[in-house]
Length: 352
Ligand code: SF4
Ligand code: SF4
Image 1 (cartoon, rainbow, N blue to C red):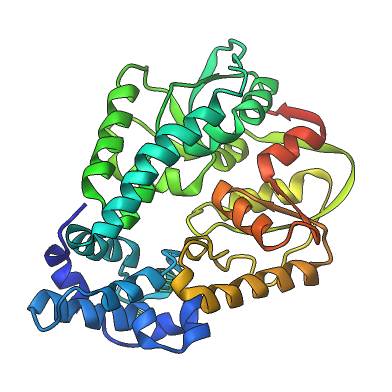
Image 2: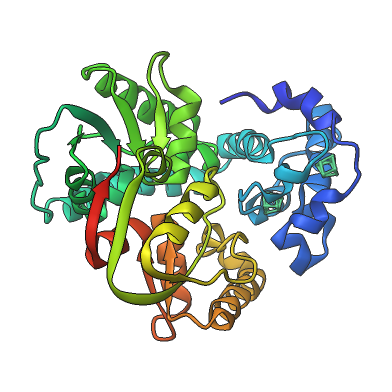
């Protein structure tokens, strides 16, 4: 993780064109320039120059950013705001007792205790042995939900799944600006990986995929499982026809692969929901200070799900799954795409 000052040139490359405003879900609600990249870069420039000080108020605007990256995709200067905000958060982290306390609880209690405790209730599934092998990185999601779907589907397609006891990829600490914790998780991943042969690594989480790619040792290759499924030409057929819609997690780079699966699965009637790629707002669930902004975001998502006419929402990120369920437990059901395919398919096979 770079120091904020190292982003000086990147921040200067913002032309203030304002195109990010049209893409930012938070700006669309607040209309406040400080809540979108353009305004954030003006503030951070002032901070680097010493005209501004890192205060609670400035951090409030940093926290408003969902780290969805929607603005970056259309930014003519190609600025990746998520990395810049993470470095700015690291500046605040140095001075804030509260941020340190939250990070401590997250590391030791949430991941170190609760997630580990939940994972003890999963029976350790063993993969069947095949000539073709992959290493699976499921992150915290697989500790909470288990590896069954991944093992079932890949084994049905004659692929062995190696499941090292990986910990978190470190993303929750990266975005909070807790450099030390992030480095600890990163090093732990690299050390554990070095004990295995150089097979493809597949992940089911787009955020884990992006994070691991940022520090993966040379010679290894990480793929999202949906890319892997498409490359290996898997085939799915549902037991009976089901109408579904799909929420696209922000970090997923290979939505085309998911679309390929949705369109190719037999008996799956896929309906695209309006703004299917708009952030679910998970990052805001714990930001009680911005309650009104995030409530608006949640309401829009629920309305778009209802407009799709589907009672089943599929997604491919545990965080999005939790957020979508949090909005409405009764109006629709939310499933992980892979779990849905595993549970409802009468046929899982591979052509190549
Ligand atoms: S789109 Fe990019 S260059 Fe334009 S104002 Fe936003 S951050 Fe700056
Ligand atoms: S990352 Fe998302 S929430 Fe943050 S400024 Fe960009 S579009 Fe807005």
